[in-house]
Length: 146
Image (cartoon, rainbow, N blue to C red; front, side, top):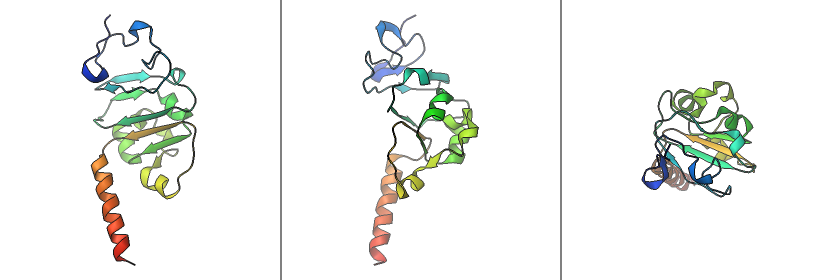
């Protein structure tokens, strides 16, 4: 099978491990950027990851979509989500609902950040722009209350 890679590293089916690369497609475990759309089974497995890995699973989620092996979520020191309820319905948590109690929403983490070795961010619907706007509004409101 061919790699099925489209522009920008998209994986569109086929054997994405071609060319002697490791499971992350990097050839050496370095940082990797992959754009994957519409998968219904895991593309990335816990056995493929090195200690200290961070994964951001961002956007375009839907019922049934899956890109990560649930074992990745189980082994992560931090499972960061934008919304537990939304991630259980549309994100990677829909395939490991029992981990909903482990998940930490972004707002809670920002209030009490902590250092971690490995992490997964499952972000289903809050865009970067939304977070930036919320931060600006918060900062403006805080300045007014002084």
